[in-house]
Image (cartoon, rainbow, N blue to C red; front, top):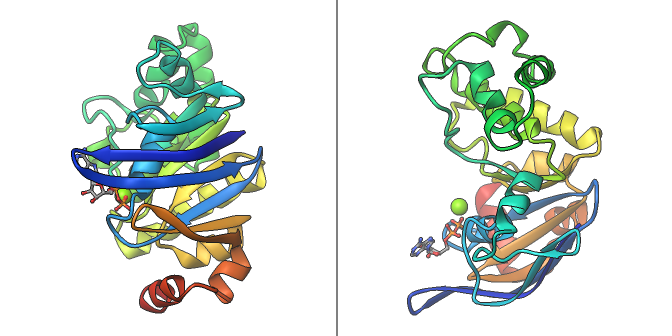
Length: 240
Ligand code: ADP
Ligand code: MG
């Protein structure tokens, strides 16, 4: 579903992606792990066209992702993103945040968007929080609203960029369990995370990235339990 072939990206003179080649199949969960500054967020941002890339090719279901192209709007409606900081509109209710995309980007009828928005909020365990504004919700609840909002676009895949890193430890579990359920339901997911337990249990594959290159990739259990590369071994020793 998602293909990256020899993707290069520089910011000024600094090359931050140095030839990334990877693919994600339909219904696959791929976790990207690696040290801070290694290029993980940049990869996600290039996949959904928030960032341009310099060389190589990225495609989603065969359609080339080109951030200069008008087709980028189509890519962004097909590939949703969930950020570390939930990026909800504070002055709109949870439900209004969820239906924003369907109403204004997809031009769905209001009644239909509201009905599905309520279903999605129920799906993330927030049926009774639909009319509440984000500042009145916990961080874990806000991130679950953000996931419902991503789902509201009926995406083909969801990219998660450290979705639990900004949360108090006791709120991490409720977000991971929503993500686990999505994975069980067959959602295609790319997840940048430091939650190695989640990666081991839920991911089909893990990519370890360092310095803008994929140092090691493979089945989640083999990369996390028997890392082959010294840099992967060193990283895992530090985060586990
Ligand atoms: P990660 O998500 O793995 O922590 P990033 O993809 O955010 O890493 O960043 C990779 C490198 O690119 C870092 O050195 C970062 O400082 C740099 N970088 C990221 N975004 C920008 C930008 N918009 N302008 C300049 N440098 C950037
Ligand atoms: Mg990042």
